[in-house]
Image 1 (cartoon, rainbow, N blue to C red):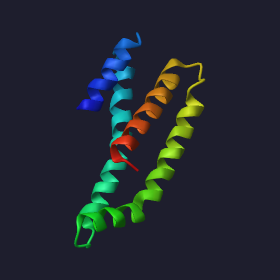
Image 2 (cartoon, rainbow, N blue to C red):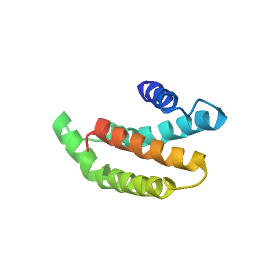
Image 3 (cartoon, rainbow, N blue to C red):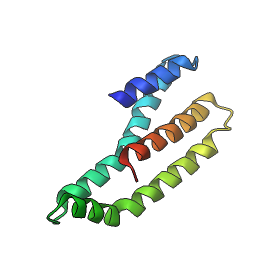
Image 4 (tube, rainbow, N blue to C red):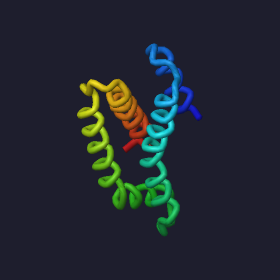
Length: 109
């Protein structure tokens, strides 16, 4: 919910408004953003280690590299979209990069 309100606020503050395409953009970007946390949480939950510290360590060992690779490719795809002439693609690229960065900070990888 926090990401959704932040995204809608950013779009409105930037003067983009909240039309159909922007609504789709917010939903897609939020879905991409929670992906990292969900994978890390799932790995933590299925871990058989006895302590929380060891569970976190095993989770990061098993999915940490994949999460970082996904984040790097997401930011790369967003960077390609930024200079687009079609405003939806440039908006989508900027929002996607911003949410990816925030999701990684929340995941703390």
